Image 1: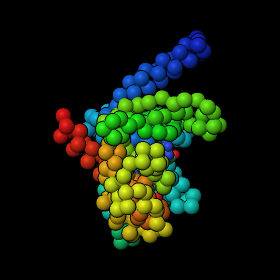
Image 2: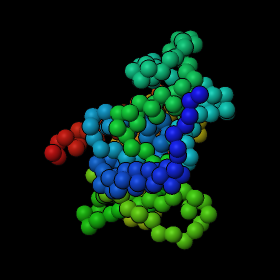
Image 3: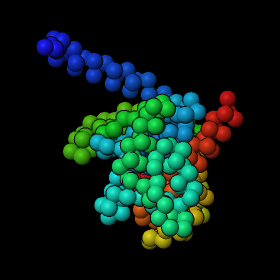
Image 4: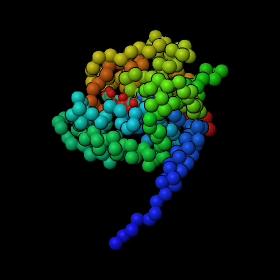
Amino acid sequence: METLDELDDVTISRAIIEHYARDLIDALDTEVAIAGGGPAGLMAGYCLARKGIKTTLFERKLSVGGGMWGGGMMFSRIVVQDTGRDVLSDLGIRTEHYRDKYWVADAIECVSTLTSGAVQAGLRIFNLVSVEDVMIRRDEKVSGLVINWSPVEMASLHVDPLTIRAKVVIDATGHACEVVGIVANKVGGRLNTESGSIMGERSMWAEEGERAILGNTREVYPGLYVAGMAANAVYGSPRMGAIFGGMLISGKKAAEMIIEEITANE
Ligand code: 48F
């Protein structure tokens, strides 16, 4: 009969603490820091990591995936158009043709495969961590993120945060566009929008939302890019429901712009 090796509980604890602390210390200086692990943040992280750019993603919740798990109203299927389908196919995610330009994919397969691809490409993800502030220096450029444990935030505990330095930050926090909100409110900076401040998300209109999202994916403040639903919220474009091609392509576009910027500055 097979016997299990003797296990020491404290060795297990030591392994967990040492490895996590090692990885967090390594992440203190990162090239790109992403707030939010929904489809846009994960896709951006995947594309950056694949190019060998040191990228760290912070997700408030226990699980990454954001609004993708639940498809539309908890029917866990998502819809993409042809371009979105190409992105899913590149990741090895299966799609079924519905009709015309519409393709359907299993939301669970999308989140799990995208997450696995991103982590294996080198993206470092810290879940249960909330971004609560940004680091700003005299040049008025966002130069990092201020983070804390989500349970600290949830319990409103008076615990000071820690800081991550980054060359570039991406706000991929979805509808709430939290990082851009922090810059607008606390830094008082003028954003690269028509009004100089957050324009606010508009009501559901899939076609217009999908059309606008790529143009809205850009550097909204020095050092701070915005991707995914946050981009449409910042630039005053509509939400679009359970059609996800725009989210994925927005994450990819943010990554491409940042790769260009980092490469040009090397
Ligand atoms: O909301 P979310 O999925 O944003 P997305 O990637 O995709 C939007 C779609 O899911 C959907 C849609 C499709 O048409 O409109 O809504 O743009 O993912 C955002 C993630 O960011 C996390 C949040 O928990 C979620 O998983 N998040 C939000 N604020 C913070 C954060 C924060 N301050 N710190 C860390 N994570």
